[in-house]
Image (tube, rainbow, N blue to C red):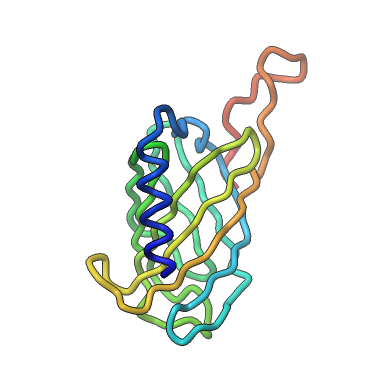
Length: 158
């Protein structure tokens, strides 16, 4: 049922013009999320996420104790879709086979964004995905370059 709701959400969002500007993701981010394993139905969390996205939209970071190895960002309708391969376990009580991450970003604010995420064991099919939501905050808030105080357009890496 959750998968059907996610498909309906993505279909509806993809039918609308505009969408998220990937430039808003450039910078260093930290977030905390919770996720639910579909089978067995149990909530796990919190999980700490760190992301660094450079001006070329290459990304790196961590999900819990796992490191992001590969990263692909694409615009899918009004949503930014980030697919990543993870190396290592997210946390000690997490299943060891969840090494694919999908983040769906619907809106990016100046210093925050929220994303739905899915952890899977196989990029093609996983009958027991884990799904959740994470809220990110910019590690070093951006300053307005038109105001006195400095034209910081991209924070330093954490």
